[in-house]
Length: 194
Image (cartoon, rainbow, N blue to C red):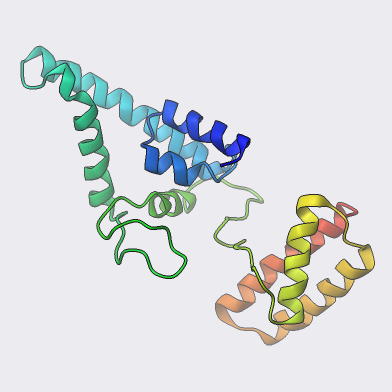
């Protein structure tokens, strides 16, 4: 875990996220609209939980020592009720989370659908391609690296934009949407002057 990710991890823990949630979601920038919504929702949930817990402690139904486990139970119930649990267990390159356990990414994707995000592109739409088998994919790998460190020539980016536009005309369905996202990234890179 890098320094920035470690800081985000600690930040999420301080906002009442579980260690699993904090570990997974710390990969995202803190300014991500859906993550900001999740943080606000979690603070509200914890506030409601503490009010309920203090009433139950006053009535003798709970003990103070039970609060950490009750909080975990509260979150587990939320995951189950919302259907945010791991369905099949780890497969391929998925996170090693056992079947039926809370899945922070399912929660994130659900919130992401309602998060106000003008111009925001989901990390799910920007999954990095590790090896490119086609020229278009190889170009995307290069662009992803160039976005991180700078350095793609404007001629290269312009050529890739033309290739993406041709591919978009031929594509259908989800593939067309993915190519459009990739083309838009190239356009932004071009506008930034690389």
